[in-house]
Image 1 (cartoon, rainbow, N blue to C red):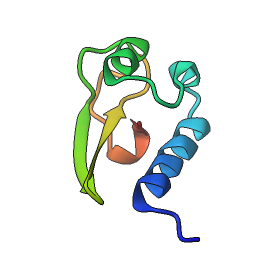
Image 2 (image 1 turned 90 degrees about the vertical axis):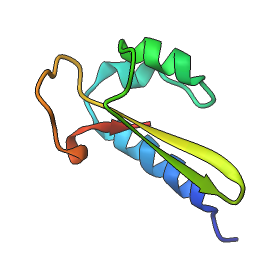
Image 3 (image 1 turned 180 degrees about the vertical axis):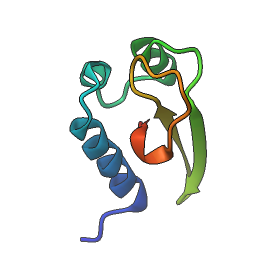
Length: 81
């Protein structure tokens, strides 16, 4: 069975979150609302958000900088959710 694109994106985001040392990411769970995720991450807005329409379903990836970071960072150093 071929995995769908949303599943692959979700797994990629989960693996990226696991590899980071950011303790905030460990407080997140599958199915958490966007507002709850923002509250856990301690920010009003993510650094960046990308929207996708895949197989008629809307998917939004939020990018967060590591805790305590004040300078702009390249995308590879952010945590996608």
